[in-house]
Length: 202
Length: 78
Image 1 (spheres, each protein chain N blue to C red):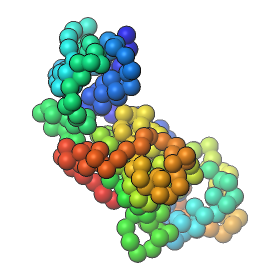
Image 2 (image 1 turned 45 degrees about the vertical axis):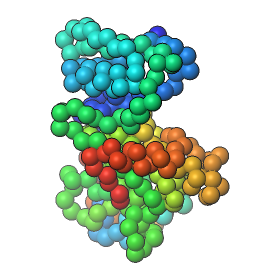
Image 3 (image 1 turned 180 degrees about the horizontal axis):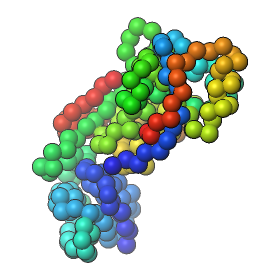
């Protein structure tokens, strides 16, 4: 039994956390997700069902709900979802795409200060993006020596997927230096943007 | 809602001053980082230097003795 605590998390974080927990499993397991609102119950249930798993809900108390997902690895459907929020809670699925380690063109020193400023400001938002996708020069930000590592780690801790393009890490000789988030590929980079309500590119 | 805590924030007249402070602090291993100026501070350029409130004396004296300019040192909940 694995417990995912998504109490107090804003949509779509409960779904993102649940999917992460399920994806990390290598064998059949029951995953319990604790949430504090009915919309999250709906979203987590819908997401787990779309992955092909059996779902049960339970009200534990005031603003306390439990969603139990029976994960049978053989039952997984091919349906892939990237943590988009399909509810009507009014919150947007925001994806941030960073293709360089400088923000804007003109002056590089200023551009580097601006990108640091941008990633910091992202962490200060009340509603966080579902994903931050890094490619080309952007992968420098998720690797050893990056001035925004701590900010990206903070985002990951809040349930944001920070994903760096594997081709880019390889090309830049940074594969061994990746320090936060996970490696991704072009299909995922496209899929996440296709499912986004808003794509932000600094 | 995100929890906030007090931070020391230096504001600057212009971006060049902010970048000079960043360069100086990094070279001298002084604490802090560049952030966009918080909305709570209306004066100053777009960039600010953020550190912990307890770093105030150390930073103020280091910046002053290096002759670096800033337009104010504020405590803001961030």
